[in-house]
Structure formats: structure tokens, C-alpha cells
Image (cartoon, rainbow, N blue to C red; front, side, top):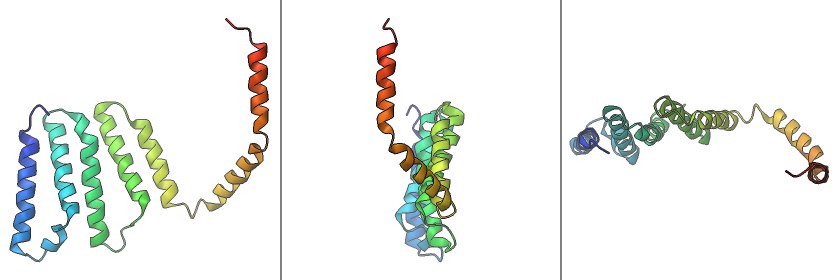
Length: 161
């Protein structure tokens, strides 16, 4: 990190607020007493560093840390918030999408994790589709030796250069 001022400043302010809230025992201090708040502080510091110093490689881990911390806090705050592995895949997809805007790679991985998030979050609705895919793969798998035969014929008939 070329310029540590933003990163260090956000870390110090975040940790100061974290410990001050815990010392004051205020009515909302129980919301920020656990380690997810620390994840959010370090994530915010990495995001701040990425934008202030134009070191966009820090954007992805910053969004991951902030998103994971926020998700874990939301699970404790809101009973309706989904506590599912698919939410983590969704956060990873968001991190890939946002960082790909600046870093210019990772868009494919973002779509992969987004698809994985939707499959895991809505797997009960996809159950009939999974059955169709499974039976199709089972039917095709019986004929895998044909693939070996076709590759062998291709190697025998194609002239080597």
C-alpha cells in the first residue's frame, strides 16, 4: 500500500468507535460488540484505501470482509434475514462485480458465484430440474467408452503435422 493514511485512519477511527461503544454500555452497544463489527471495520478500511490511493486490488477483499460482517450482523438483528450459505456466494458475486469495474477482470467469476448463489438459495424450486439433469447425465454416462473410441479414431485418421 503506497499511501497508508486512509487505511490506518479508518482502522483507528473504527476501532476507537468500537471500543468506545463497548465502554459506554449504551443501549445499542450489543449490536457492535462482536467480531462481525471488526470485519466491517477492516473491510471499510480496505475499500477506503482502494478508492483513495487508487489501489483497486484491495476492493475485492474489502467488500468481502464488509459484506460478510454485515451479513452476520443482519442475521442477529433481523430474524427474517436468510442465514444460508447462498448469501455468502451472493456477497462474493457482488465483490467480483464491483471489483471488476475497476480491475477489469473477475466478471466471469462474478456470474459463476451469482449462479451458485441462486442455485443454493432456491434449490428447492429447482428440484425437478436437478432430477432431469441427473437422469440425463446417468443415461449419457453409460456410453463414455464411445468418447474414447472417437478420440482414438480421430488420432488415427488425422495426419500429424
